Figure 1 (cartoon, one colour):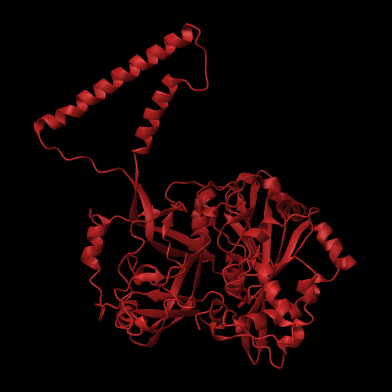
Figure 2 (tube, rainbow, N blue to C red; figure 1 turned 180 degrees about the vertical axis):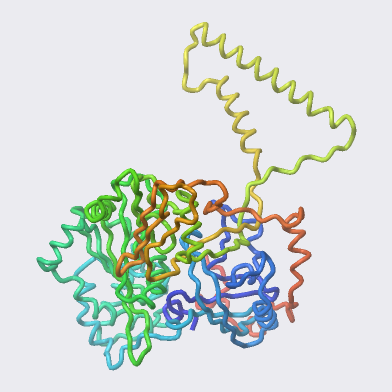
Length: 580
């Protein structure tokens, strides 16, 4: 039941301890810049399940606390909440209803969370014979342009003669070939249900290997498409590259997890209400706008009797310059001195702008006043998000004084440091004046640099903290031109902006009147998180006063099994024995 392909996209399984702490959860962020956080093993369930309410930080929802209480007591039950889920490095948010099912699992508790509406629907291939399809999997046998989810277990080869494979795809291909044999029997190391669904997905998508028609080739050329791809609910990813080289595209190397990819999750959630629409996005960091690619995705649902189940997501990547050129051709007045045009996505990130440096940035950081009007007029919805697992850089604590002499000593220490630095600098200058020249390993320069770096490192200390930030989602699906004359005193400012949706997409075209000055004053739309301070209390002290939630002692310490002594110590079939 906890297999990811059975839970489905935007769902997950979590495991909690007897104290309500997280052992397993998709939002459990244990590392900071590659280093284990000091509080990684003290993250409470309430700190990863953010309910969509108006409560202040650490004032957790009462219904959530009630569910936590039942989970800690190892009861079996169900609950549902409206939640806020951040994604894409906290740049985006999904607001939806999530259903929770929980029960006991050993000394811990298991929680399965599923999204509303499509979360309870699954794809079933009725009347399909897997063994017959396995004999005709030409779509996978004759091509290398496919990937599987690297973290899922399809089939594993274990035993004394274990075979090591170069890639998960080679390992699965090995078992697919074995499946054709008449004496094939399913191994206990094979996920039979997943493999069968995967084979049928591969059979259905064989058309992906067909040659492109002339009409498709023309569109590929016109829009300068680099790659097209498809990912299914069984973890299968197929692609076609239109770049003339034999290397594997970087997008495929870094986006091979199908339903766990951000673009997959966003597409399923967005397309459920807006079928046939494409979701466009650009990277948040633009190294070179001329080489930047736009990713477009759309979902495929299987539908019957009014029920919809996510089946796959299709997509492609094309040059950013194509979209920019389309805007120039269709809206030339946008590039006049009096107007500025932007193409924004459904989370208010810029895809197209006059200034290339703005691409990928949050619109509120570029035009805060206009962003304020968009929120005030109901175009974008503003959502407050709390991060209870954050790390802040803080000054290290100052040493406490032990005597009056201790207060005087730092003064003399600083004086001595200044004199030492002056003396070292003079000696270095004399060495250069006497012809010593510049060498790669200058001991004087190295000493000064080492002291500078040492002092710079000691200026801050990574410390666990709470932070808050605001994320935005497109609220209105149909727009009209808006007259905002009353908001401005300038005689030549008759309107601030005009906004219109781009059909069948998550984009809007925004035209801003440059005659209306866009001031930064009074509008705080910085997308960076801000640290939360709790009444001059340190965060551990504040948590100690607030976190009086249910805890449960373990019933017993289990460190031995009653049948343990019966195992044959000379057999390698049993675990717990070291063999040389």
